Length: 308
Ligand code: TUI
Image (tube, rainbow, N blue to C red; front, side, top):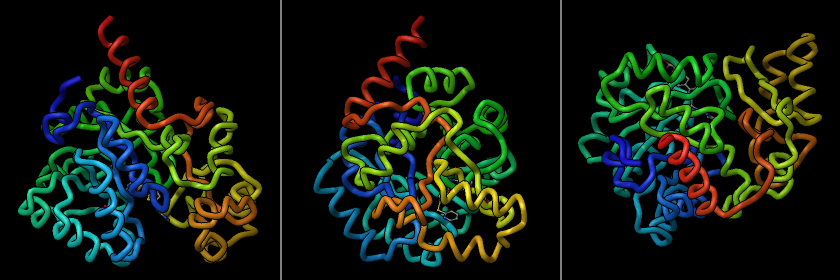
């Protein structure tokens, strides 16, 4: 499974773990990297000392390359961007904004830069700005999403760019990887499947929600705030969706009740006030496995399908 992505990143498989805010910490990142993919630590809104410590812990647990995801809406994104340079991080992915202003300094430091993008226009801008690759992320993904689907977005981004494209959104097994390659992608980003991994440090209630989810159990909330997010259906996310639909919750009230809701889901498993961000593919995930098994099973199945 050698592609321009394995060559660029120096990994065995062209598979990147999603940079899931509040979720992706050093244990998960090191496990994915040790399994032959690229693990990511989420820098979304993290205090700088926390992220520095996470990077150092990850280095202690893997000698393979790993990366950091910078959530560009973070108030301290500038500091986190600099930290990646200071700590010699191999790969940076970005989300929820345009990372253009950071790219020259990252490139200068030898960091591989992979912005996550929801549209062809932004993908083109990123290529011009010097990105090494892009993640084309479909609306099937968990968390903050764009409008276009993986099936429609990926081939259009592939056609528009020279740099390699990594597909994301709705991929959790070898069929999804093989399909992505048929669309022209040279790698995949996988998030939701790793929620149900042994090494993922989220609350067991969160893992149970993923494992029990059916195909119809995800819902997008917050479109009217400009930051639509895909969540698992819970009493809380259904309340948000209904409040948005019937006007009983203003955008300001929405922001207020969701403040801190990612932490409440991830750390406390709080079903009353937590936002359990999760992709639409959760319905296909039925067990909790070690990352090594997850990566091996996915890649073995993909290779079989692509070899036919
Ligand atoms: O970033 C993600 N997924 C995320 S970030 C996150 S934390 C969060 N918390 C509260 C509100 C919003 C986010 C949870 N999940 N995925 C990558 C992604 N990037 N999806 C969409 C985008 C994106 C959107 C607009 C990228 C660039 C962009 O550019 C706008 C511009 O500046 O031109």
